[in-house]
Every structure is written in C-alpha cells, then in structure tokens.
Length: 315
Image (cartoon, rainbow, N blue to C red; front, side, top):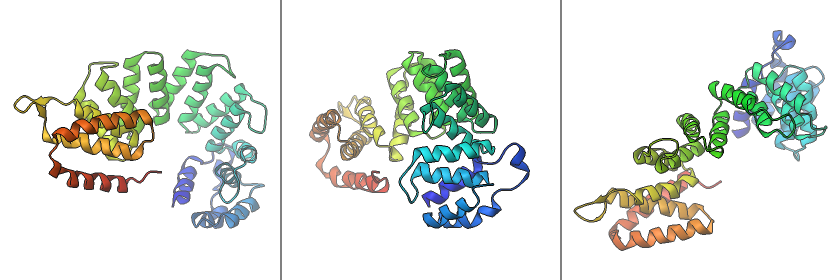
C-alpha cells in the first residue's frame, strides 16, 4: 500500500511539461504500474526499463527504484543519472531531484548555479517546494553566493504556494535569527496544515510567550493535538503544561481532569523516550502525581495509555 500510494502521489506531480506534454506517457507503463502496486519490483523494473529510451516517466520511475531501494540496494548515483534524463524530458519532480543531485554532488561535481536553475524549472512547473530548495542554497551561501533576501523571498513564495516544508524552513530560520514573531507566524501556518512538528514548535512558543503574548490554552491545544495523534515528542511537553495548570483554590491541588492528563501523557512519554534527562523529568513528575492521585484511578488511566500507544505504535 505504501508503494502504491507513493507512486500515485508522485505521478500527480510528475506530469510532463514542455514539448512532450502533448502525448500521454502513462498508458505504455500500465503493466509496470500494476507490478509495482503488488510489490513485484523485479517485473516492474524490467517493464519500466523497456520504455526508458523514449519515455521520461519510465526514466523517472527507474530513478525512484534506485533512490528508494525498491527490490535492490539503493544507488544514489544511478538514481541521479535517471533523474537527469527525466528532467530533460520535462518531468517536474525529476527536475527537483536533479537539483538535489547537483547541490550535493551525487555522481557529478557540485554545481550550485545549475542546481538553482533546475529547482526554478521545477517550481515553474508546479513543484512549490523547489523554490525554497533554491532559497536554502542562497541562505546557506556554500555553493552559490549568499543572498539572504533572495533566499527568504523564494522560500516565502513556496510557503505562499502551500508548501508546508517551506513554512517550516521559514519558521526555523526566523527562530534561529531571533525574529520570533515571524517564526511564530510560519509555525502557526504549518500547524494549521496538520504538521505535528510545527504544532509542537508553536505550542512551545505560545507557552513561553515567544513572538507574541503567552497563551497557555492555545499552547495546550496544539501540543495535545499532536500528542493525541501519536506524535511522541509532544507527550512530555503536554504533561508539563497540564502539571502547570491552575490550582483549585479550595483543594490546593490540580483539578482531577488535569491531574489525570499529567499522569497519562507522562506515562506515554516514558514508553517512547530513551533520553535520560527526559526520563529523569518524567520520574520526578510521576513521584509528585502519585502522592496526590487516588490509587483507584490508575488501572483505567493505564488502560487508556496502553490503548493509545497500541494505536500509534512506535516506528
């Protein structure tokens, strides 16, 4: 299923542009696609190879075989050779991958200017993130002259075209540059588009009042949203936010709902982390919780944690 979905998605953005766009390249590849969908990699590879001389989609898919290691050891050099052919055949995704090959010097010398040119071709053909891939080269300044304004402009263009990776790149760049309102804005954009890492980054900024006023309710919303969908890095921060919830003035303790959430998310975190500092923090939280939480709650809360972890098994 993973291979079928990946192939289908790649065909969506590997459409032909330019002179070859007037002919449909897919019908000749139906036998290869059926074999790939059933994970018959050897048969699929042979079927694509039969059309590789004249069909750039076949070239692109052969590049994926070599890149992903489908039925064979991964071979980045061979992958880049196929992507080179497919890129010249006007396959936008291949143009982006060829840009990666040139930027990294895979099977050829590093060529920053050529990498930017291929990224821009891919972006013009509809691969939104390719603009930010070019932008990253300008921001880094290692293989093209450093141009921060150009780099940010390209990544912003990609983000405005709904590229979540570009939003994340901008968030991380502005956070590192201490331009925190901009960082918070772009993490918010990516969080709204269901990126768990962005949801955690945004939640942490909201809880600390970075880039704008602190908003603990919104911080908890985003962190727990990621946690509930099985994103393990969100477990401990969510537990900590609940541990710092307002105290009930009548009891001098957390509200029962908040106490139960501290227990569940800290125990989920303990099951998923091997980081010694995090485990020490979890142990301290657990010791405090167990002094005030009624013992009879534990079996039901443990069952909920077990069910959640089973639903989102560790990779």
